[in-house]
Amino acid sequence: MDINIGIPTEDRKAIADGLSRLLADSYTLYLKTHNFHWNVKGPMFQTLHLLFETQYTELALAVDLVAERIRALDYPAPGTYAEFAKLSSIPEPKGVPKATAMIKELVEGQEAVVRTARSIFPIVDKVGDEPTADLLTQRMQIHEKNAWMLRSLLED
Image 1 (cartoon, helix red, strand yellow):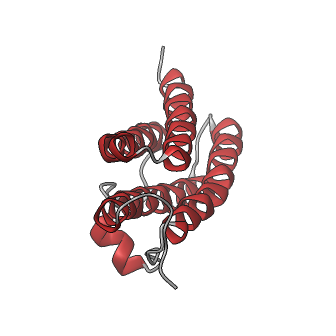
Image 2: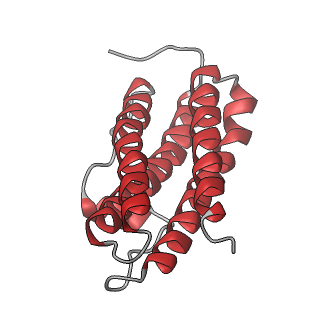
């Protein structure tokens, strides 16, 4: 059955493509954060172990929201490691970094997700896609806060 939600097909496709990049970035950040949760060591272990758990748990819920929005626009959501690797702007970690390097990588990942979300806004605004705008605003707010919290751990 054809979809008619008041957004032209080519605009829905452009939004879904942007959301697919957001999904890939979010899933890659989820995986990286979970990895660091498992492997962090050192004097900040307890603090970082719990913080990383909080952040990857939130990301696990977020990826579902993004994927469901892609589906609501009538496009398939990417869902394989190969697709995510191709779409994501977040690099995989090399080995197991030290705790401080983990924090820096996660700050960069949080900020990358914000940039990806922000890049989708022009088309979303142009066509009046309020549900996607709301999702993007919420994601940006969470990731900006997470980046700030992580950056604060790097202060002397």
